[in-house]
Length: 285
Image 1 (cartoon, helix red, strand yellow):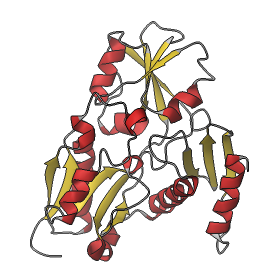
Image 2: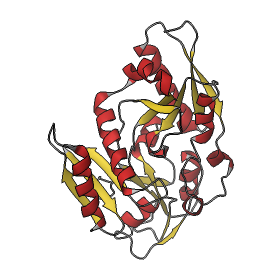
Image 3: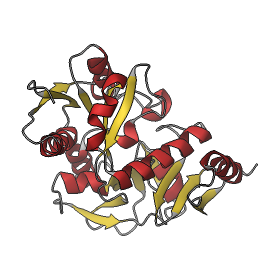
Image 4: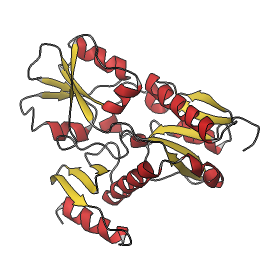
């Protein structure tokens, strides 16, 4: 590696910075003696806090400025939550690595003293459609803001419940919060978003081989397969499609067919043909 520091582009939110610092430590550990530095950027999604992600679509809202930093040479790596990344890469960019995955499940956050929430806030169609069967009488509304903001909104009664990723809570060191109760959900109750719990490192195509050593093989296998499934479904972060690979299975959710599980293809079998069959079954074709 060069004597020059490796520049990591990151968003400024507390969770994004926490993830970027994990990536920074990982880079410096893998490239012993190397130096990594963080460079902060504000994305469109961070600026447009009043936007409805469901109406506008979330594609690229939290990634474009970081990708531009790579393309114009301001950064060497961009640090993303893998679930925020569109399945299509901008020309000239590649995914260099996925870091070891955190917990992948979602957590129901309920206002203290509320037995069955009547107002549930989430900007995720995936979460809303999967949880509607558990709270059929609830009113659903959108919520924006960082993790602390969302927790505060529930604690103060602006909503009676919301849903957050366990990975974000763990990385921020939040085990409890005044005024709310955390209720972990299993992946059988709510199938996670594609890439949930994984940190992705993006780079220029020419640098992909150089940074390949940063990859966690287990996470990379799982997330790449999840992303292939999402691409084949034509989905994105503003859709209700979910997919998670674990224990030799692909767990899926789709608004028309609900939750399903599919055994992964055996080594040597054609993944493309298997995915085509899975998509047909998920879509009910």
